[in-house]
Image 1 (cartoon, rainbow, N blue to C red):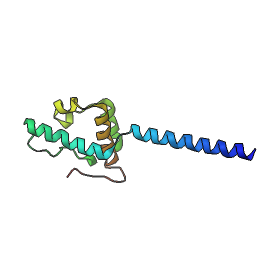
Image 2 (cartoon, rainbow, N blue to C red):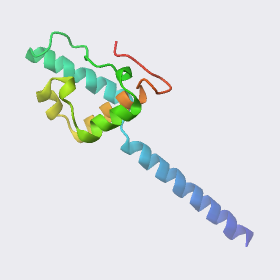
Image 3 (cartoon, rainbow, N blue to C red):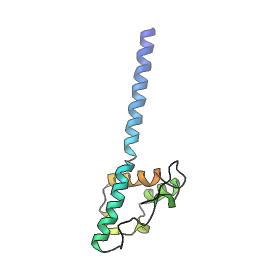
Image 4 (cartoon, rainbow, N blue to C red):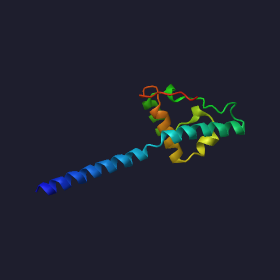
Length: 114
């Protein structure tokens, strides 16, 4: 009886740990997102649409809820560089979302693009 209980507890622990890792992967990679976000504006500058490779919008200009709404609606007009934003994959968008969301004004670690 005791052995079955231990096996059941270990199985549930493994199940929940695996589910947590899977859910974390769906949210994107914020380090990769920071790189991709900067790369978008560098490409946009090379094309001549903007004067600086520095992204015009820092992560801390919005709250986490505002970033979630922006990416849920896929409304990227305020960012400019429409051609570059339209060419991003869903994975790249999730990475950029993770970066902007994790460093929003109301996050534990707000950040500005440097």
